[in-house]
Length: 337
Image (cartoon, rainbow, N blue to C red; front, side, top):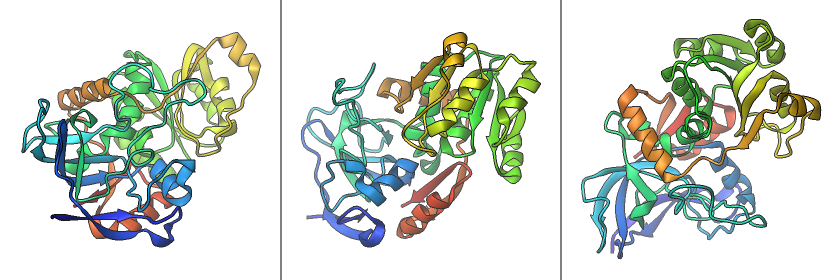
């Protein structure tokens, strides 16, 4: 019997979040055993740790959804990977293409580190379909940032948004999804506006290629001024809540708003008149499917995109990494094994 260390909680709340040991499951038919090299954190992981998010968690529960590692062993019938392959996880297991797996009454939210166990463990054993090949141009820490934050931005702008060169893109904030959105948009020739309450973070965003730096308050009027009242072709709506009202005011006629974040609340609201007159597309983005992640990996290798990592923590420092997430980060926070 081989054992692995993993961070887990015995109940919602950070009080009993600590390292425990669990038996390493040998891969069965169609499964792969992966040695974890890095895990990146998302805001959703913080919510799961603190509240459980009303998910059917089985305790002790291992959080986090995004990892990169190396295949150590494969079960019978596995064809997609072999020992030694570098892989990253998929956020929504079983979502290979298309929409979700649920229905109108029960929309899909079956993810790693939520409905399914998470990846903050030295080893994970999952079906082979739950992984994709890691990009060749990134190290493990960088690759671990792609499955949720990176794919969310890619899905909003490229898969669903059909971004083209010259489009005007407004991105809210400087977190993981936001900076991926900035880098992806610039790689496709877009004009990027980025908002933040921190002048220092805005200057760091400028170094990544942001064309226009906007204060978090009053950014709509600045978009009007800079674009000659045209507005924004794409808006990554990361604030959520009543913040949707600003996006409805700023979006161009026929533009697109991708609703991604809930930092200001789960109940979004905004005025009906610009919605009716400008006929924008408002689309909720729930990360994306496996095929889009595979497309994104190819895009990363082709463009040389390098994810922005605010800080890398050691495995033993996972609690400190979550505390950093709570304070806010410029880009991603990663735990290395």
